Length: 516
Ligand SMILES: *Cc1c(COP(=O)(O)O)cnc(C)c1O
Image 1 (cartoon, rainbow, N blue to C red):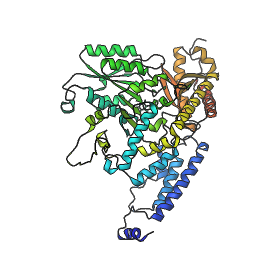
Image 2 (tube, rainbow, N blue to C red):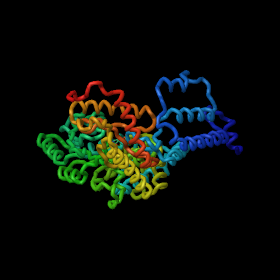
Image 3 (tube, helix red, strand yellow):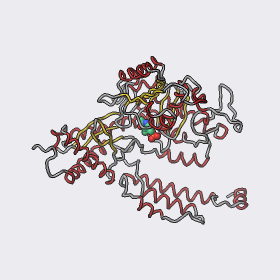
C-alpha cells in the first residue's frame, strides 16, 4: 500500500471501505469460486429443490445486523447461497422462457462497470461510457441490417425497449398537444398488433393513458403470423369511424412460438396509412444477422430495415447477463422530442453538431443510468459478427434437433418450430388417434401441464409452455450456446419418460372418451 492510500484510510475509516489487500484477496477468491461454479454447472440440476421456507432458513431470519462483518466472509457466504439455490440459466438443458445462458465476459464486464460506476445519464458523467453505448447501439443496428445512424439506447429489457418507441410513436403521430393537454382532448388512439403480441403492450396501453381497449388484436393464421389483410381492414374501419390509428407492432420472433410476421407487407400498409411501424424483435431480431444463403435465414426479417423503431434484447439472443434491452429509433430527433426536458439545475454540454456529447437522459425514460452497454459491447467484440451468426445458427440447430426427435418418437408430438423455439407435447400412443375428441384433448392438456410441473421440479431439464389452438404445449427456447443436439435428444427422452409416469398416475380408470 502506498503512503497516500494508507493515510486516506487512516484519516477516515468508513465501514464500507476495503483496503487494497482486502479487496484483492476477496476478489481473487470470488473469481476462483465463480470459475469453479461455471465449470460445475452441467453436473448440477438445472434447478435444485427450493421453497421460500427452506431458503429463508438457509439465509437466517435475523433482523438487520447492528454490526458489520468483513467483506470476504460475506462474499463467500453469498456465493454459496447463490450457487446452491439458483435456477441455472447457463445449464445446457435450460430452455425456459426466453432467458439466455449468459456470456462469462458479461460477468466480468459488470464487475468492471460497477468498479468505475459511470452514470450514463449525462456525457460528462460518463465520457467513455456514453461513447461505448453509442457504438454499441450502432453495432446492434449494423448486425440486424438497420441504418447505423439511427437513434437508440440501452434499456433494462424488452418491456422498456418497446415502451420507448411506443411513447415516441405517440408523441410523433398525435396531432394535438397531448404532452400538455393529455389524450382526453383528442381522438381515440388505436394501436395494432397480432394476437401473439407480448404482454408489454397491455402495460403500455394501460399505463401511458390509452387504455387497453385502444389495442386492436389482429388475428393470425395457423402459423401464428399476423394476417395483413385483416390489419388493413381494421385500420380502415377505425379511420372511417373517426379514430386515430397511429402504431402497428410487428413480431420478429413471437414470444410463444418464434413466429415472424410478414414484416415487409406490414411496412407497406404502414406507409400507405402513415402509421408508425414498430418491430418487436426483443427475441428474434438478431436472426436478421444470418446471411440470406443460410438455410436458417427468415426472409421476412428483411422488413426490419423499413421499421420506424425496433426493440432488441441483448439479454436474450446476444447472451448478455440481465439486464440489457435496446431500443432503436430511425430518427434520433424524435427521441429527443419525446424525452427531452431540461430543468434549470442541469447544465450539460452538448458539444457541436458534428461531435455532439450525447446525454442519454434525454433519449429515454431513465435519469441516472448504469453502464449496461459495456457487457454488450465486449461480447460483440469477443464474438464478432461471425461468432454471433454461428451461435444463433447452432441454437436453431438444437431446437430443430428437438423437433426431429419429437417427430420420430412414438409418444411425442412435434407441433411448431420457428427460430430457436420448438413446441411439442406428450401423447400416449393409445390416445393418438383420439386426439381430436374433446375429452381426450382436455386430458392431454391436463397431462402436459402435469409433465411440465414435474420437469421443472425434477431438475433434469427446464422447459416452459405455450398454448397453441387450445393445446397446452411444452416449449423449448434455445438461447444457450452451451446446448448441443445431443442435449435435444436427451431432453426428448426425458419428456417421454416423465410423460409415461405422469400418464400412469393421472389416467382415469374409465376410458377417457368413454366410447370403447
Ligand atoms: C422477452 C420479450 C419481451 C419482454 O422483454 P423483457 O426483456 O422480459 O422485458 C417483449 N417482447 C418479446 C417478443 C419478447 O420476447
